[in-house]
Image 1 (tube, rainbow, N blue to C red):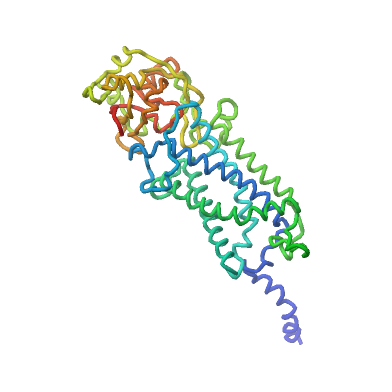
Image 2 (cartoon, rainbow, N blue to C red):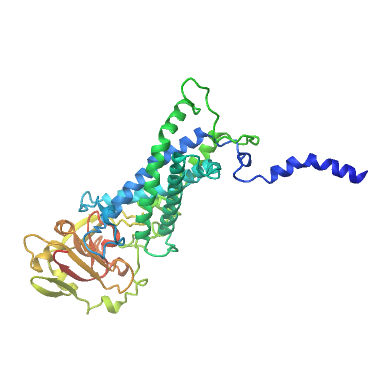
Amino acid sequence: MPERRRIASLPDRLPDRLTALRTPADPGFWRSPVRGVRFTAVLGLVLLVGLTLLFVTGLLSYAAYNPDLDPVNDKTPDKGLLGFYLFAWPTGPHWLYRLTQGLHVTVGIVLVPVLLAKLWSVIPRLFALPPARSVGHALERISLLLLVGGALFEFLTGLLNIQLDYLFPGSFYTLHFFGAWVFLAGFVAHVALKLPQAVRVLRSGIPRGEPDTPAAPDPLAAPDPLPATLSRRGALAMVGAGSLLLLVTSAGRSFDGPLRRIALLTPRGSTEQGPGPNAFQVNKTAAAVRITPADTGERWRLTVRGPAGELRFSRAELLAMEQHSAALPIACVEGWSTSDQLWRGVRLSDLAALAGYPDSPPDVFVESLQRSGSFRKAALRDNQVRDGRSLLALEVNGAPLSPDHGYPARIIVPAAPGVLNTKWVETLTFGEL
């Protein structure tokens, strides 16, 4: 009898066992009551605006490097038609790169909770079988693969870059550039397919069928939901709170005052260099790139090349030339920036005149004392050389440059990415590049 009772009770337990064996392809596997097309549509529209802004500011960041000027500026070889939009990066307004790159990095960080919530909201669809029900459905799944893969890759490499964790193989610039175009292909296709439905859902609150037919069931809602512990509005509020927290702890990388002090997610943005005129952020320190006092001492000379030949100047001789001042920030691709600092030195256009270009300053190729690492050489376009605020800076805020800020001389150009404001300058070669 005991054996018979045990056998008889086995069928009663089979439904529970089968439930436990459900796979992600089974709609009943996903039981959150929060999922639904309206919840997903709200997140999708936020991402539509945010990701569009990220893509545009990312392209502007690439253009700011003048990648078609000289190979040393371009970390993305063989871009071909993908560089169709490139133009001569302007020098005004002087805070342009600080704005565009600050937006790019800050918005990217703020969108992380929204992106993760959006992926969570549609994850049941990723496991739906069959993988493709029609040609249109197959194209939608392919666009989704490009979109999800591209977005995760771009966010991951971007976040690693601003946290100074270069774990990815190859150049960040190359990977991020091509990854952005792969993402864009999926993004445009997905928006074209899904935007009308998202707008319709937000207007009506439910997905509609064909005219004169009953409303279709919510395809993202769980067929057998668990008891609700959080409403969909509450879930959206949590996502918004996460984004707000990331904004507060990262936006200060681009501002002075209290926000900078609480920029906890900014390795360099909150770093001060001690008291005094040089007490503002740096990227690479002199020690990190092995610049020694012997390299920058009395024996240092600036070499200027051009049609007039090769000229050499000591720091004292540069200080004896006509000095000019410019209030300019430093803005880094990692998203942090300084406020305007008062730089003083010799205009690049004046040095171009000494090199043999008195009337129309050309491009300039800049070389640093730094012997290794990226951007120890950089090229500046002629419009940057002509700008009266573009300096070979010798002082900042009324004091000589510190070793970490590029002593004995550094480049400072309005609206240029920080890496093009070369420190520890050794050679300037003027001419068409």
